[in-house]
Length: 329
Image (cartoon, rainbow, N blue to C red):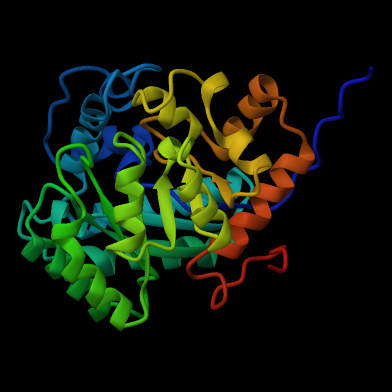
């Protein structure tokens, strides 16, 4: 039987992309030189994680150097603008960018300045490329509830630029419940919320994200398989799963791409989306992710079309920044 022809490029939607894990290696090297920082090894060795890290903590260590150079408004603006340019190259017409502003205050920059700088960079990228964007701020599980509340308050001060609030970090050792107040504040102000869950910990973490923090999307969520009640809830309420296949293999969330549950969950009627997570740390693009799914999991144009519609329907900022070619939800 003849193989399916190569798909015609279609507009894509990226819902889960971390800014600090998606800075071009060449930009990191240039910023390091400008800032007088000596890199201990070639930049690619420091910022691109191996195919199998064995743990989320080791994977995250490859973001340390990007964070070191992203401590000025100028660096943040540049990284954000270039990421939008990379979206366009990858066929992305709408991309959501998330970052934790509290991690960029080591040299005196405030959270407000960090958010404003990223927003300015995204705006510059939008103007030059036509790619629509949304900005999400990340609270971190290992930080205190007060620190998360400060991030939520920052998001509300910049509500004209910020589309949503996220909770990221080590779900195995740090539950979501202590951060409830930050998310209640976001909900009260009409700010959309997503939560990293079901990546390292099991279904209980996803239940907590939904029932305690009111998440309307789940970051990763690969460990929902086997909990029929959870699957029914996700399907019934159209809670989108922001899946990142390459990253999920790197962190050990799944053993290999052939074990990734995206295909099974998509065929089971869940709102699966496919994302890069960290374009530099994972050395990937959406084109690469879909290409691998075609090769390993037998995905067709129909699979990508369904994922595309799920992503468009779940986008936090698409109603006010509808991208060219957006499917009607």
